[in-house]
Image 1: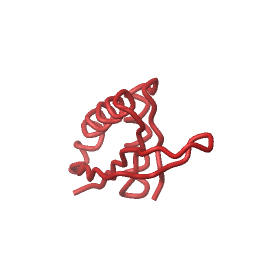
Image 2 (image 1 turned 30 degrees about the vertical axis):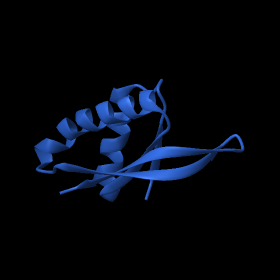
Image 3 (image 1 turned 90 degrees about the horizontal axis):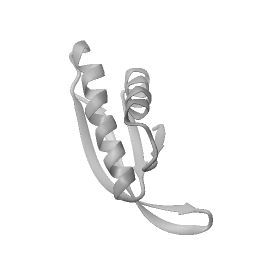
Image 4 (image 1 turned 120 degrees about the vertical axis):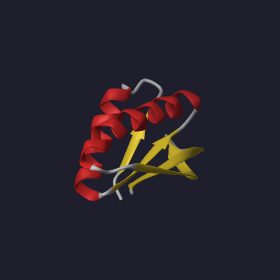
Length: 86
């Protein structure tokens, strides 16, 4: 599954475009976000992407989970959002 990493500085429209493209190609994608700002941008991107894929009759489903990741040698807990179509 392809992983998209979102930061608090990510543009929600760019996140939405990348998300919609991966959904169209592979059917599912994983988004990783560390921190409240990053999660906010990720959720906005998902909401925008839903509008991109809706005309083709697809609806997005979001499955939240935790992921332990390493950033510059430091262990952090990220929010993992698995996005699938229904």
